[in-house]
Picture 1 (cartoon, rainbow, N blue to C red):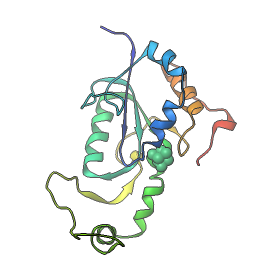
Picture 2 (picture 1 turned 90 degrees about the vertical axis):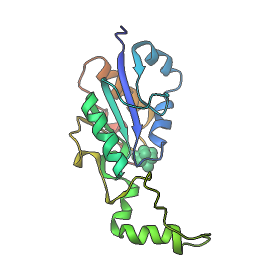
Picture 3 (picture 1 turned 60 degrees about the horizontal axis):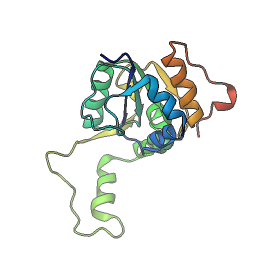
Length: 179
Ligand code: SF4
């Protein structure tokens, strides 16, 4: 059995920008691949999160599927990290919390400029929107918060290096930003 550190990642109500920033570690990813194995992630083809050492969550929680996936990660990951502004405080998508879900749906699917064949999607396979967008710590316990929109590649590197080596992650002042 592999003794590599297992990492799972996902994007909930995120934009994939945090994942893109993670990939900005560039050639350092080869060093990472020496010690790490990816479980469920947009970078792999694995559908469900199995037992993992570290779970990286991008995005807040905006629909029922997000809740389900987040709980699956929490159940399976020893350490869960809120990655980026959306996971930490809801981020820009949480601006929709100032209007009702109904108003959002009507604007997007019925009344918005350029809407053709107006109808609100209601296929039972579609996850239902929650009333509000939530930061992930309102749904599950979070062990660490990685700030930034997105966190820079150096933040990812600093954080992951510490977690992999069993050290407490801490960021130098110049890497701490929320934008
Ligand atoms: S924190 Fe920023 S980059 Fe990351 S998912 Fe949210 S909007 Fe995208």
